Image (cartoon, rainbow over all chains, first blue to last red; front, side):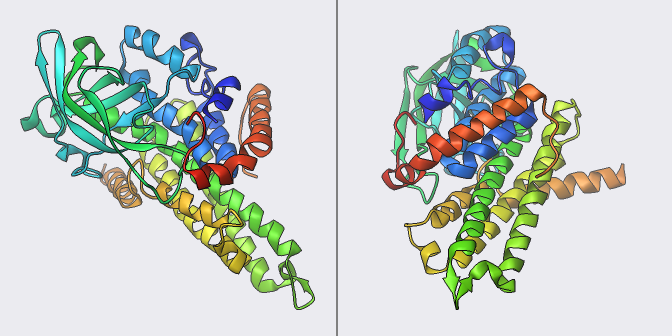
Length: 343
Length: 41
């Protein structure tokens, strides 16, 4: 699938033309992720993670960093990964333990990252580490760590519930040597870079969720028209029709939230954080509801691996968790809502 | 389907991606899930 996306220039979509990309709008990128995820959530994730791993460089990288790293990512020759989460710091990114100490023309990184999509496969890892452990979030810095840098290793490969075609791994830094020119932005910029990145990539996870939900709805509609019980297709039963109507309405509402925030970003609006969280949270919650309802409509067949409904539900679950749990999204939304009200 | 304001060129690209997804990705989705890997991923 990686080769297929590269051949078709799909990886190039999120990258500017001057760095070998197509310079696609954010709306086109989310629609691409949605279309791929409608058939296979793992394949949709390939595009979403390429964007996630590259976003810190796009937002805050130097011209040299952009010229070195973005073209091979746009061509799909290299994969990207985003190394923020640690074993002891998921939602609480400020509790990270990975440290980076400058020694001459290098930073020496020590620590590890967990649950990293594309971990071990990505040539380009954007990694967050403490350069000033006393400074809280202001002590976090961002680095570009290449897979073959001395001291970089891949730890456990995770055995997951869903998105099984995507490798998720632990990244280990053992006196890992990173050239100073691979610092993204300035020391202490890392947390802000990470948050700005997630603001712009969460709509992609929302799009993945919409795609999964649409795929499940398609399946449920098709099955309900074919499955005959009591002498007629189950689609003729009002109980099934009501379920299908609710599912379709939820999918459409989620899609509108995702497209809306994508267009806000395309218009250059600056205050879209809340809308990004709403889109990711709502779309992933409805993906779980719709995939569960699809299984219900398929009955016993839905519970079996013979049909893709159970895979869709397993794939949907992670969209409520990664790039910030939905509980964190609700916090983000509530904080911004309250701040606006008191302004 | 929700309104989305793409240029004709981007609409064409999305249509091509939909074709790839249904024609080439969908038939392999179960295998990717079952084997836990996809060549090249």
